[in-house]
Amino acid sequence: MKSKKYVMMGGFAFADNTDMKKLKKLAKKGWILKGWKFLSYRFEKGEPQDLDFMVDYRDELDADYLMKFEKSGWKYVMSIANVHIFSAKEGTRPIYADVDSKAEILKTQEESFKKPAIITSLLLIASLIVGFLVIPETGWLHFLWTMVITLLMIATVFSVMPYFAYKIRRRHLKK
Image (tube, rainbow, N blue to C red):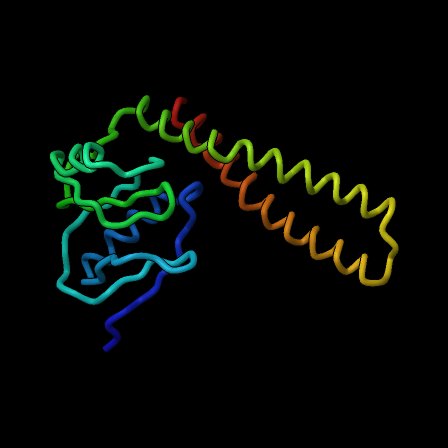
């Protein structure tokens, strides 16, 4: 029987609640969240547990922040950049249960993606314009331009999509 397992993440901007339900379901089956590896959660086999999971966003972890969660029954599990995952016994009240605090968290995340989204989008547009007007259709310069465009498209997708996802989720939350 396997003792380790990897499960693809849904993306915190798009599916943090879905991911937390997935973590809960896997914990009930004895798969204990131990970390992450390139867009996947990493689990190790253990005893089944009845846990709820919660995601929070914060730039830095400090003792006061962790103590706040601990006093409320939430145990720190892991972090990916400024995204932190906590677990607690099933039924534990979430730290951020009201709409205003959830909206504020989403707004903070939205703002963190705003500048990269604008910059990568402008760079992509400028590179496309320059490429179509100046770059020859063949040769090493065209190949280099194609690589730059590809990288900028990837960067744009990974900044613009989360920006709009957090923006839309925040608007839906306030309705």
